[in-house]
Length: 228
Image 1 (cartoon, helix red, strand yellow):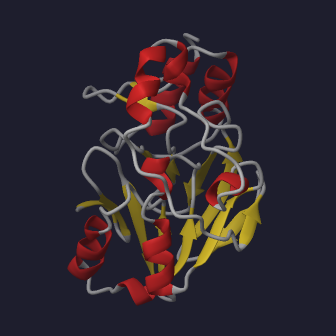
Image 2 (cartoon, rainbow, N blue to C red):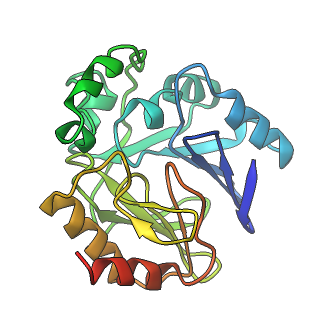
């Protein structure tokens, strides 16, 4: 587990979920891969919390490495599940999971996708629309960042000067530069979402598969957006 800032923790290895700790309980953003929920339970224990303390589970998008642990966390906590309208059918098992955009560049990787286990369907309790502000363990404002999936959402957490929870709309390299990420492709939708994130003001950014940017994060997005 890694502390990002007061009350925000990053858990996972290679793929991240986020624990937001608040006075009225815990909000979890994404749930990682199936059978890997020990990252979440261990992270909760490290801050004196249990699975039962999770009140809300917010999903950035419906890919296996973000919803794989959802059924276990949901059954252990009875937390409310929140997701975009577009990605909710995948979470609920009513539609197939769409492959990530990198398949445009590396179609042979489709074979590898078949090796991943399927996520257990989970009912979505609340649909989230762009512009919604969710008063959970901390105020989260939702932004539409499609491209990685049709209904991909990013969230701005009102804490420590603003923390953008990017999901897989973009990534960052070891030098703290914003990049599309290996799992994305240079599509108009991906680039438009990076540009949209860059219009907001925030100090930090966290990603599904990259280390956090802890200072000047909105500037890093603006720098990349200007080159797209």
